[in-house]
Amino acid sequence: MRINRVKQLWREGRPAVGGWLSIPHCLPAEVMAHTGLDWLCIDMQHGCIDYADTVPMLTAISTTGVTPFVRVPWNEPAMIMKVLDAGAYGVIVPMVSNRAEAERAVAACRYPPAGMRSNGPNRVLLYAGADYQKHANAQIACVVMIETPEGIAKLDEIVSTPGVDAAYIGPTDLALALGLPPVMDNDDPQHVATVNRILDACNRHGIVAGIHTSSSKFTQRYLDQGFRMVMLGADRIAMANFMKAEVARLTGWKPLAPAAAGGY
Ligand code: 3PY
Ligand code: MG
Image (cartoon, rainbow, N blue to C red; front, side, top):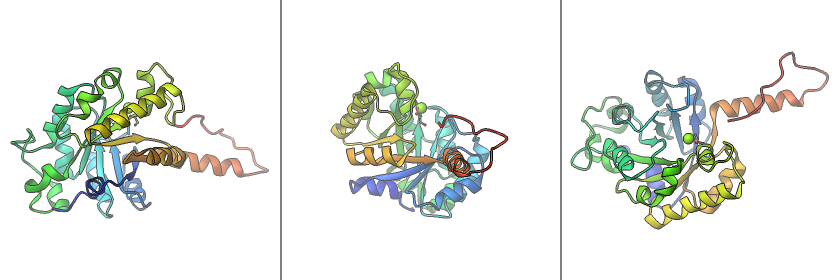
């Protein structure tokens, strides 16, 4: 089986930096796959992306050595199994709040006897190789998101769940969970303290800590702190930020349509 290069980095104690895909087409996926990132995540939760979009996006990513992840819309075994069958090498499961939910996510990622994943790989056999089922349990990454009030309260029971490879922080939902505005790259002391607490719990239980950002400044900060799954930038936001900055540089011209405010 083709190895999961991100899990290999993690086994070596090294970090992996990734990007985010929210535009439902194979071209932005292929473009982003050629930007030097270690992994890309197709976002079926908040991206404008359905299963029929996800499959060609996975194909586009596999024109490179970038490791493909999918964030599923919810902690539902059916969709987790379908994206794995299509070639995702890792799933990111949103809003996991307790041990039972973490176990549910893990079980959907693992073939019996370790889990309850149903047999039926399709495209993944072409991507991974004919011996996929033999090695999939070890190669596939199960990543649970910590971003709810209950998830913060039950942090230790989630990150110690056998089979969870990484806990990934959604900074804006985490902010809402703390009663703060949903800011992504967040300097609020309460947010910073909670992020540090999650990192510490992951380290104590020997799993990878991950976090979403929207800048190299925060990506660098989290890498320096010891996060080993850090998301640097998303297709839609990179496009908007680049064009807005270029438009703003022009002189002697006034745009008819003002740029939209806001980022994430
Ligand atoms: C969050 O900020 O809550 C996320 O899930 C990032 O995508
Ligand atoms: Mg979130």
